[in-house]
Image (cartoon, rainbow, N blue to C red; front, side, top):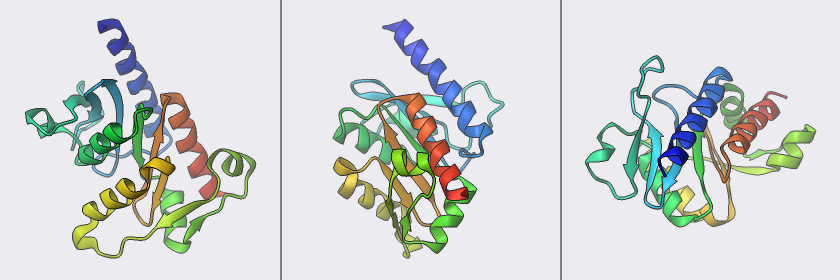
Length: 181
């Protein structure tokens, strides 16, 4: 009901603030969403300034008028929620160390304990065709979504999927710390 949705929105704001403080989330480059109902989710608005009151919007899975203010990543989030029933939240993060690491490696191989045990080795997807970049990102996710919950894309950051908002924030932090190490 209404209380549950209010709690989801509060949790969303707490995690978003954490991602912002840790430098994992930036206006224009990233996206963050959480499922609210069977056919809806909240996602950050595109071009939002984080001092504004309404930093996110609730939209339907099916593209409609509610999408006009939503992040440009809304397509990826919508597809993912429809495909993976236990995905509750999704973040596209752009952390400096991870992005830098992705430019020089084909595989993410954490050396630290948390990186190895929680994230593990990950393929770094390379997209060379910048003309059709968004379509290629979508294609990578569509193809691998059922057996992967973390996608690292060269020069573009990572998409992380989880069942729990706090777990998602933890993974985002660990992946960046591992890249830094």
